[in-house]
Length: 66
Image (cartoon, rainbow, N blue to C red; front, side, top):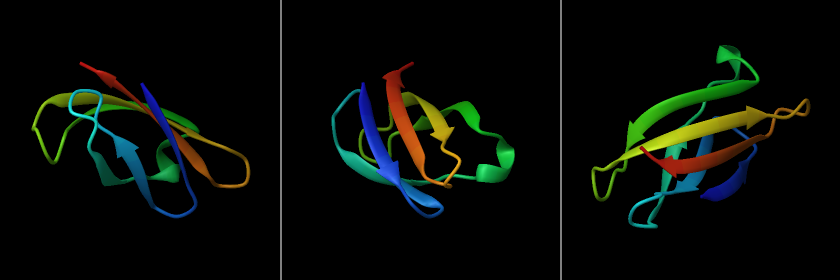
């Protein structure tokens, strides 16, 4: 599991499989807590991304292996 912070519509997160850090787009209009699957841009394995938006607009991303 990894946790990273962001302040715009791009956020960094580490792959739950290979550990490589990549940048993903986040969309605050989809709700304050989001959960979806995205393949790692490096190893292509699926990660569950859990995105939580704070009231100030920042987001935290948790990654888990699917």
